Length: 117
Image (cartoon, rainbow, N blue to C red; front, side, top):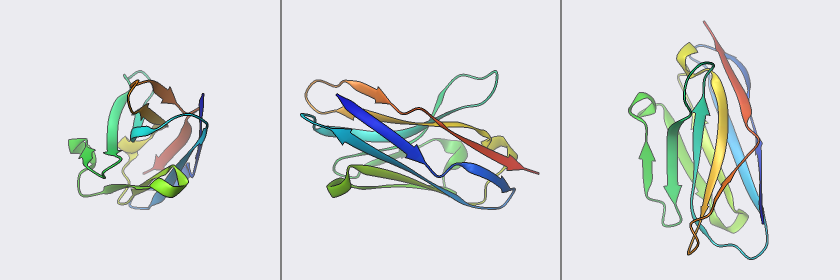
């Protein structure tokens, strides 16, 4: 079983920055990819960015050039550096992990990001 613990959310003014972290723990798993999704009120959950074990990255068009995803394989941790935040970035941000071989999906509990105008 895999547990994901997220941190780093909060309230920030437009133009500001936040850094999210997600640490995976457990036993008997190997990571294929980790990523961040977000869900705003009344909207579907959407991909923000993800990164594979070999550090191939994928970003939503809306965050390209502003957000950077990275990972520390030794710590089983993924980070999301969010710069130039906009009110439209306000959402609950969820960490997702996909395991290698079984392709099982695990989700974190979510962390709130609020950007004020």
